[in-house]
Image (cartoon, rainbow, N blue to C red; front, side, top):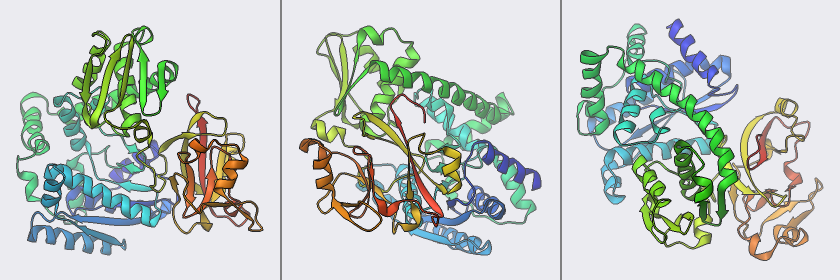
Length: 476
């Protein structure tokens, strides 16, 4: 147990999965993997000052077995002194109503529950129990569905606020440790069925590879995935540079000129296309290598040719220009970010208009006063807000009637509409300018570089929300 404890904690340190004092929502199904995850985090809890809450999701599929899992999850969390929140949903009905498979509907609903709990508690992370075998399954699945090079890297240790502390260990290590510690867990009977593609890979394909081809198949697949992640990190740097240089950005539309595009390697060409899809829709999960190749082929095709992609994206060629945009939507609808009106997510990158008139990116983090000195915040264009004074997590949204901002710490206020007039922000731009708000109280107006005095950091402030600001193409 001590060796595995050190392995998991070392993996968390290496990938900076959490910081001292973080709040973590832990997915707890009751199965071996999630039980071990909650158990190991309970051991790390005190030295790291962590705040933990377990979340169990009852999918309404397995009747008495599902109820058994729920009761066990609640009892196990209670035995560790960790609160457990339960969500219930009829996943088969949800899947039918949204034209999804039960597997996909269940996954979407689980993460919605995790995020709802995280937002309510203002916690920083969501921990899920994926391990090495899950990683190998993901890589094989992505390969078989025609994924891009990025998909072949598998799951990352950290993606925005979702962390995977167990990616560095195997299922065998988990089960052996639970046995040694005499910790029981539940068996999900549906995991033994080969109805789902992932179950087929888990129950048939990988065991066959291990028995007939290579006993270390899982670790070799995972090692290859890790290497591809390193390769993709480098490619991302190159893509960032090329994107800023050759992609023309308009509201709801992105365009590239053939003469500039043809100078790039095939890898960068494909990554630029994926980056465009991500910007237009906020996602790219269903974009396969075949879809990307369809766009690549447009550059060689005749002018006027058009193709349709997932998410209702249309790509078309006009002379030497290929453009991508959302089919049937206005430019304003296309340009509206998917996160408008949502509470901010720590570590997520948000694009917005800044005071210099250029688009830039903002990343939010939460920390103590010590980070002010560490980050030299004024020099690095960092905004600081007193988290202790917030009644709820702030949201990024468009301006609304009644919005106001504190001018100074005496409590004098001014309407946001008046600030826009004073700042000479054009009328047509005001309603689509992002602001950071708690209710009608505006914390920050990026386009004016104005912050509310109510949220100024003082000597009594203990926790701070930091907004790291950078222009496109520049590092933080």
